[in-house]
Amino acid sequence: MNQRSPVYSRAGYCSICEAATNFVAQYDWYRDHLNCAQCGSIPRERALALVLSRHFPNWRTLAIHESSPGLRRISPKLQRDCAGYVASQFFPDKPLGKQINGFRNENLELQTFADESFDLVVTQDVMEHVNQPADVLCEVARTLKPGGVFLFTAPTYKERVTSERRALYGPDGTIDHYAEPEYHGNPISDAGSLVTFHYGYDLAELIHKWSGMDVQVVRFHDHRHGIIGDFTEVYLATKPFAHSQEETGTPFVDHTWPAELRATCEDVSRALNVPPEVHGKDHTFRFLHDHPGFPTKNEAIDYYFKDGARSAAKVRRIVDEWVPAGVPLTILEFAAGFGAVTRHAVAALVPHILHSSNVDAQANDFLSSVFGVQSVQSTHVPEELLLPTEYDVIFALSFFSHMPRSTWGRWLQRLYAGLQPGGILLFTTHGTTSMQYFPQAMLDGTGFWFDQSSEQGDLEAAKYGQTVTSKEFVDGQIAQLSGAEYLTYEPAGWWEHQDLYVVRKPSAAAHMGNQMKAAGD
Image (cartoon, rainbow, N blue to C red; front, side):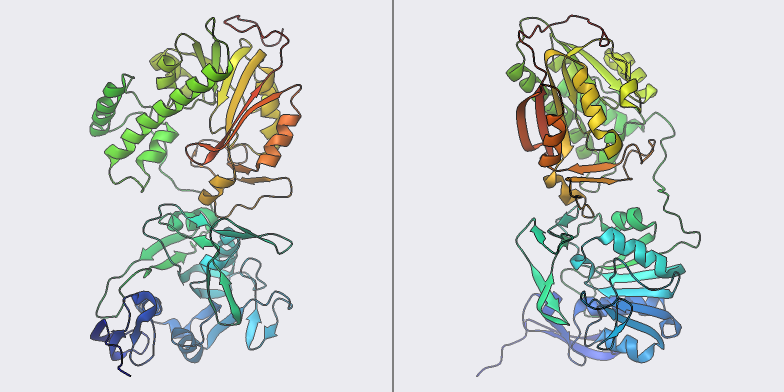
């Protein structure tokens, strides 16, 4: 039988053997098939070893914990050459912290190691199998000494900007699959390891967000060391000497943008016939402007303006569908921000009258002065919100997607109470589709999850974080609205991931129109 000819063969230097070698691949999927002729290692293993030797030339003298080590190549070398090396595996049915089959039994999400035990923590393609990566990162940071490093590989998909959760283990051991099940090899189980995440280019940011550690990503295309093909990334997450989980994002200092950005805003807004002004604290604009998913800043700005126009047009379609419009209506945009939608809604909702509301007084001033809407000062306490009228329509886009449990239902009650009889409330939430953007999210028994983090850095995260809710949770909250008529549920109906809900306040003969009736009357 003829032996298959290699598709790749090249002389080089193996970072594991620490010697000259040949790298040979019988197949063109180099990730799994480009082997060192001497030790049999594959590219990601050599990548980790090369980063280890370059960044930690004294690694043999360090205290190292490796979770789920391989049975050959780099892991045996670490164990053989490093006196302070500890290897762990996770045996769910065995006591944690005990030696089982030559390994310490450790759950990465709930470790038994003492604080500041290690100089290095190492994993090889483990993070894509964990259930709660945020918990893992926090535990790793806890067990690292100040200045210690979590050195690991994890497949990072070049086509993904944001990471995707593919599966979730429930407390009872059941598995929710959000994508076709995928399994990788497991050195201690023939059943393999379920892939729970496909990580994107946001992983470095997520690591810092979850753990406060600083992150470097090393990516290779290195023929000499036999590190080519897909998934060559090596991550180094460093625990600061003064460990802090405070975010260090760009502060919103001035309220102006560089001239070239303002010029682009003017060009795009002119085509849409809307004002070009963008406030320096516009969190939506800044989020899109800084987002790595846009190849250029111009494309991000174009999206900002055109997406606002799409949202305003969709609000108008919903209003036309559900509200008789014989006379002008009074409409409230609640949690309007700095006008991403407002600038378009003013014209899109004509002849109706638009008000806007924010907890940020600067936002209210900006919307009033630039877009000419009447602004309503909001509060952090739902029951303290004073409205100048009962509204025919209230819409709240991406507001309930940030509220904690303590105020979620109370805000729904307060906004519903602010409607005219026969008025409609439309709002969006982070539903199950949105969980792809929150790989750490796990709904509780009521269908609710809240994380004290947000891209909006000027609000207290405990009051304005990231919230995911199931339809069952939202339905339960709607059921508590007196007489509410459930008009619409559209999963992933806004921005292709937030769920849309529309409810109507009952009225025997809905008297709609611009009747400026005080909400408290």
